[in-house]
Length: 324
Image 1 (cartoon, rainbow, N blue to C red):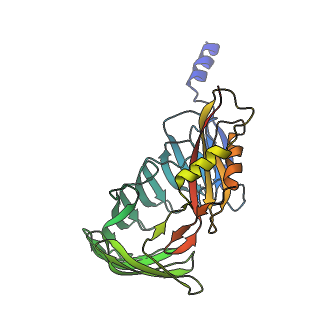
Image 2 (cartoon, rainbow, N blue to C red):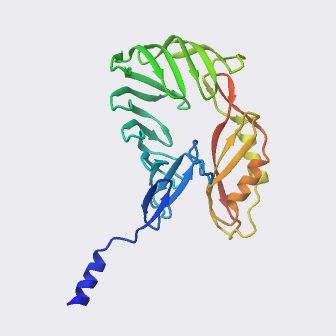
C-alpha cells in the first residue's frame, strides 16, 4: 500500500513552485511567471534604485490577458490589474492602487490601455476622497476627468453631484478651483513640485480658455491646451515611411516568420528618442533593429505640459514579416 499512497500524494501536489527574493519580499513563482524591477515610470531597470517590483503571471504562456502585480520595495502590494499583452502595459478592466500601509488608494477602469469610465479615490486613512469618471470627446482622442463627488481631508463634502469647490494638495502637485457640472469653471491655480512650476488657468463650461505657467526661474509660458502629445515634425505618415524604409529584416529571420515588435521609448525635451526598450519581439534580432532605427530618428516635436516642454513615454508596435 505504501507505493500506491505515495503515488496518490504525488498527484495531489500543485504545479512546481519556486521562490525568489527581490527587495524585502520573497515571491512564490511558477516557471511561467516573470519578476522584474521597474523605475518610477514603470519601465524595467537594473538599477539598485528601483522603485517597484513587478510580477507578471503566466508571462511565458500565450494568453488573452495577464495579471500584473506591482509591489513597493517593502514588499507591500502597490498595484494590481490585467493587461491584454504580456509586456504588462496594455491594461483592460479594473486597475487598483494601494498605499504602502495597505489601504486602497484609487480604482480606475481601463479600455484599450487607457483610463475610461468611473474612478474612485481614498485618503491614506481609508476615508473617501473622490468619485469621478473619465469621458471621451467626440473624436475619442481626448479624455476629460469629470468630478462628481469630492471630500477634503477633514471629511467635508466639498463637491456634491458635480458642483462645489475642489482643492487638492498632493505629494507632487496641488490645484484648486470651482467645479460646475463636474468640470472646472472660472479661475484655477496650482503648482507642481517635480517641475518646480506654478500655473493659473481660466475655464468656461469645462473648456480651457487660456492658461499661463511659470517655471522655477519665473519664466512665463502661455497655452490653450494642458497637454500636447509628442508627434513627428512632419506627420505620422512620414514617420511610418521612415520605419519601413530603414528597417532591415535580420538575416537569421526565417522565411514567412511574422509578428510584432513592441518598443517603448522616451521623447525628450529636444525631441530626441532616448532610452528605447524592447517590450516584446519575435527574436532573431528584430527588437535590436527597431532600437537602431528609432535611436537614429530625430524628427519628433516634444510633448508640452502647460506650455512647458517635458519628457514623454511613447509606445510603438512594428509589424514584422519575413520574405517567402
